[in-house]
Image (cartoon, rainbow, N blue to C red; front, side):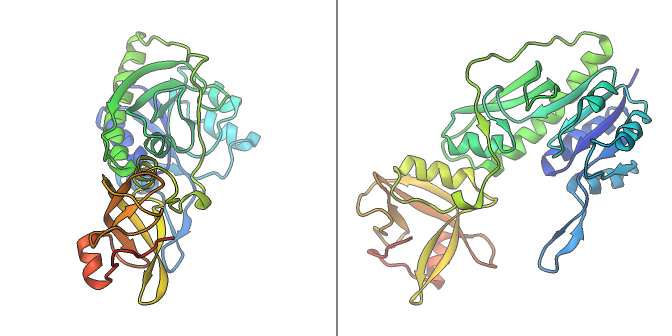
Length: 310
């Protein structure tokens, strides 16, 4: 018999899971998501991707700013849900919320726990140069991503994979994993394994201060930094254009041969020296512009060998 669920999620990553749950015939009593936020040039309020998807399915949507009040907790309990599915929701769930669903609150997390607990597991895995990651379904506890794991799928991270490409693969894989976990809950066949005490790392939210490219680092670290922040928020560097330094995002790069002073352009194809080795910039984005291949960028803004990026 399909479960009665509350779905809790906010970004694009959560949308495939909501779609799969609805498609499998589960009774979604309510969808919780972050409130609309000002966005875009006009700063008009914009609903979250999950809000938009839920509205398309005709599901009731709630956007509380907190779940800590007795009123919010009573409203949650009133849904009479068997379980909750949580995917990048963005609010801490108090114990009263966890206790309100007899079959548990189940979180889809995009890492191989206990590595990369926290807010930015996909980006941090790529930035760290990890060779693999995955998705896990975890029964939620009061701690940050500390609960026992029910199911997992591993995914290799290619040497040129960006966080964006990995995000899309994991979102699809995670949606399938969640519906398999829900089916096991219905059968009473879900088995839990505690997370190991060793290997715990934390995926802190990306800070703007760490997005600037540090050319003094080895080329492998610079490359991982670029692809780990692509497409958002984007690693950036200052490039002299028309006699003035312009901030340019670097969305894709590749490891290259060459050496020189860190940040020095080595050829006419945007190969840049790092602390050791070099990277070639493959795709860039000027302020207010669209992403473009480096070749197209250079046609409009030549950057000759010997130029110093900052």
